[in-house]
Amino acid sequence: MSAGVLSRSTIARRSREIGLAVVGVTTAEPFADLEPYVVDHVERGHMAGMRWFTAERARQSMNPVVLHPGARSIISVAVPFWSGIVSPPDDGLLRGRIARYAWGRDYHVTLKQRMRRLVALLEAESGRSIEARVLVDTARASDRAIAARAGVGWHGKNTMIIIPGHSSWAMLGEIIVDFRLPADPPLAKDCGRCAICIARCPTGAIVEPYRVDSNLCVSYLTIEERGPIPHELRSRMGTYVFGCDICQDVCPYTAAAKVTDDPDFRPRSIDNVFPSLGFLATMTEEQFREAYSGTPVTRAKRSGMARNAAVALGNTGDPRAEPILIGMLLAHDLPLARGHAAAALTQLAGDEARRTLRAAWRAERDEYVRSEIHRALTAVSV
Ligand code: SF4
Image (cartoon, rainbow, N blue to C red):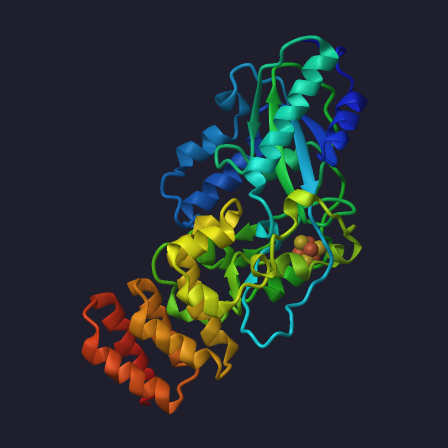
């Protein structure tokens, strides 16, 4: 198919009509300039939990033809989702926080549906079938590198793509197509001397400009980590229980982000934004599914959310957290939750917490939980 069949303006118009607000085009040439960075990132061990993403896989991911043998161009799309500043309700409950992108429907589903619809519209416009591959958040293609080369946005030092008028609050996706389109130029912008996100990351995960060590990233720890969270990081995680928005919240470009109200990204309830920590600490599988099915939060599983709630409860430093943590330590069915509850109790360390830790030490049989209780008892008796 030739480039002349579909104009760039037709693609932009059709994209906007179906909720793909920002669109850019780049070639299907390999991302050769990115390869040394990605390979270095893998070799430094900054991609925690992704052992399968070897240097060889990283090299392959730099070449769109590996994903689509007929690749000629890539349409990069972005769906903004900034909905303004919100605060938790003052209803007497201890509440955690969920990262903004996960408040609504699973963006993988939403973006793929919209991109497939765009392909169908472009087929109707051109009167030809299009061989297309739609991608969202796939480790084999770098959404961000594609968006930057297509002029959708530019790389921020927090590694996010910053889009004019939307800051970094947008979901990214791409459609690899079998026809050539004129490519858009990358935006000639950068962060300049700003380094606010680096200074404000609570765990120091932005180890240098444009480089995040996922071993330290609250987003990775709350979502992808399946086991215990490193002790030294727990107290720095605040009340985030799924993902983290801090490096985007503090970015000066966020002040200029347009408020959008995309129905697919609206939360179903306040618990999709500021979940009750008491609920997360006690919920059954069925209650977890009922509250979060169809949203990205399911990725963390009930075990991850209960663990994260224990960490957040400790970090509140609020005496109301103590009975919730005591209940978790004594009765939660998951050792991961009991262990994190034991550790979190040291941040409250009332007499009741000490008594419960001693009782739990006598009753607990799980080796991991016992190690957490032992550590907690040592901490509260010094
Ligand atoms: Fe760039 Fe500053 Fe935003 Fe970080 S906070 S991404 S350094 S503009």
